[in-house]
Image (cartoon, rainbow, N blue to C red; front, side, top):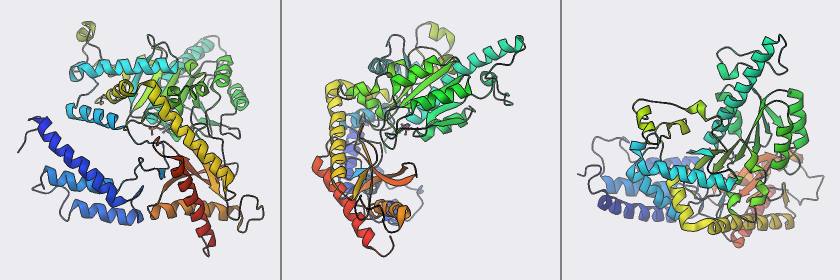
Length: 514
Ligand SMILES: *Cc1c(COP(=O)(O)O)cnc(C)c1O
């Protein structure tokens, strides 16, 4: 019988050995990028490992037995981003050093909501935020930020702070024009219960049609106005003249969200031009840049220039659990100054009483929507010190090289069609039966959609590969995508993955009705 906290290092060392062995055993059980058999087989395997009795039995199995068996089951049943044939989503194979640093945080279990729970963690986060702010191009002495659970939370915070600042400006302007007995050009009917910030009416959120779904959800949660989709060009980037037109048509204050690294194509909106359009608008606009995917390019001297203009944004979202090789969560939210943060300020008697704050105990309570919050900045700090910018940049470049190789393979294979240029490490494409030149393809576009959907499903069911699926193009055709975030994968791996996709397409196309 061990008490929590009793000789934790010895106990943890023994359990860690079990965990690492079970991770390996499970990987061997799986024998590929994901478990074969589809949802029913995986469910059966999980329930078998959990055992016949209740999940919370009267008497437990003991630490070693439960940890070993269930870790092996989890590893066998996982889609493993460390496998080169697992390339569908934006989460990455985490660096061993970051995983180990994350373990240190788990063992100490600190929380960032008050200094007395995380004395060192508080300063680590402050330093990590300043370092990332400088990388973005903000003045690190003025910038403010926080480590978040990811792009979703960072985008929500961008909309929250932006809505507070711009909504406040709008309501002041409306009050002024009411006093002048002239309606403000942008005054809408206030929604009941929408709060002082929204007194001038819901603020619209302008975001490209390729923007992340969390922008829409954040706008809904915050009771902001409608999300106005802005068209994209053929490279999936926001069409800047269309943004200008939408802003002019609206006339009033607004929130604009640009995307640096779209989810489907990895496209980076033309940030410099967007900033120019936004700043030329006569009413106040808050520009948030969702760089959850593309922010990692800042580590790479080759790619960082593609984010030019980022330093002029009012807020930025980064995600180091994507092109940053951290275990999730490792999101970051940054602003160039304190503007807007008063929205989150809180003085809570049991966390940050005013006299303690005045005496020099820093409080991060007003940096987050959350209360209990892990110091996820720690693993980032360890990674930065361990690898340095050059090695991190080399990881980004390695993934970019793999994507460029994949695009060449797709272009050279007549059965595959590239749908977007490679910007970061995403390759968007589809399979075309009978070769890409055939215009009179039997079955028409529906059959091509069905085939592409079936390729992915077949590969998943066989446990052979995890490729992404989305829709793209003017008709919303089904496409496949590779998100190549494993810098240790080789060009041979990528070629093999694309051959597998094309061969599976051929196989399905030859079946009576795919
Ligand atoms: C991944 C992603 C998000 C969401 O981030 P989470 O970390 O999953 O919350 C938002 N925007 C973009 C562009 C992304 O790629």
